[in-house]
Image (cartoon, rainbow over all chains, first blue to last red; front, side):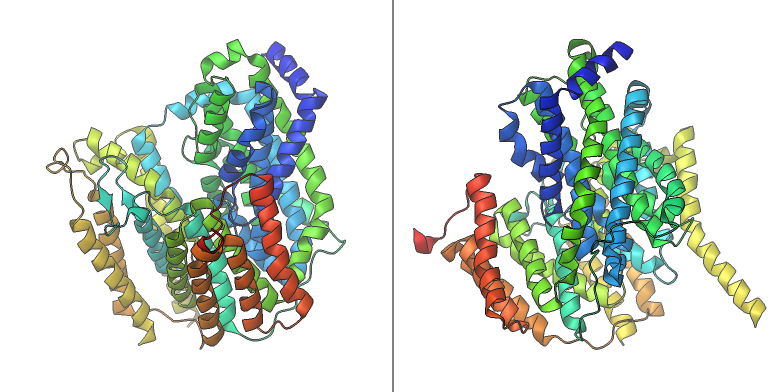
Length: 491
Length: 144
């Protein structure tokens, strides 16, 4: 292993490769910042650049693009509440209110430091545990995945604010239902397409994310009226507030571990990690600084984690790593157990270059924050048309389909109604993202058990997960009963 | 009434979804199976219907106050015009027109802002997407 790490260090520290990783991080950050363009688009756009490069250098650059795009996505989430990447949706929950309260610089600095720490932890863990963690993750079976996904969906509803539990459940179910539109993944029969070919591939994630967040938010601002709230950009004071560093150290520590472990699971990835981290962290603290640091550290650690099954087994753990797999094959790199033996330089080079990539990310983003955060100073009559325009153009460039724009406006109108009625929209987006994975694993579980739902709690691991689900479901009821008892006691 | 209106609407959506789920065609191999393309939608639809029915029965607080829908309607009109214009003018000219119209509708009157947004933004988009990245976007039927 040490020889491999030495070979990887030599590959990663090659000046040309350092330049490529810096270019990858910069391109990824810039593209990831644009609402509507996420890591998959960023990697796809950089594929032509990688063709002319050495395989190891190409792979190293693409890895830089990946975590640069995830990092860049947090900026648009915090500043304009337009998460172009699913994994930064959770960052906007506390980051956007902080920006609106004149703390954009603080929120962006928190995101930068937490991402850096999560990324470095993830790279370290990848270096140490790559082989062992991959074999552990592959031991998971469909029932385990089904219950993990149910747990993820339940937890966001169960840990919602008082009075929002039922509304969160409704939103999550609506998201799951939206995710069923399109051809059935197993039999290929059309579902809820109403004869339209435009819907056969399902509804694009970016469309739902833009409709329920950026566009619905712009619509909501329009209906609310009134003057602009005072919004202060970060200015030159891009630093953590006193006490922030102390507050986020345990947050970053536990959520980096959580993020990395979730990232290793095929199919889970940075999105699930960030939602898990946010809800998990809210159990400990209401501090918004921790609310920003938790998903940011988790999603960057999860990015590193998702390389475990990709590099050691050749199995992509997410859509983004699936695109990376295609890039690797086009560069003549065959990922899997033999990669370590055949091309240790590429295997360890990518892992070691992640340290350099994270340093580059921090060095790039901290100086840029004062410039980026000026976006928040833009007045509402100017900001709203730009948010709407970025959303529309982002979706159009992804799908090149007029119908998707009409669908987006329709979904945004529905999201506006839900939002004005007090329904949280984040569970809807999470339900939509997890819908395909949940259905696939649930169906596989039921097929293998001849339709018996009891198979969801037959093995020790599934029993533990099923009990965890039950606890999460019972928690709000228990909370309500306790409040009633307290109220009765007080009266 | 507003306490029950939205849950009732959601209940309606759930019932319509269940009805559509029952109509999902099944291939001959999975028609007799306990698990098929209808199973997951039926589970989701039934859960939503139950939940929405319960919320309709109890009523839930409607938190929002009265809204101003005039500017919203104007912006939605601009969006529809933008989508309609794309096949004729192409993406970038349509974007310029949309930005100019939307800014004007929301009260922006400064010529540098209107001009900069409606010319500068599409120009920047064209340079980034088409010139640098080489993505082909149909120029619009007006320009051939």
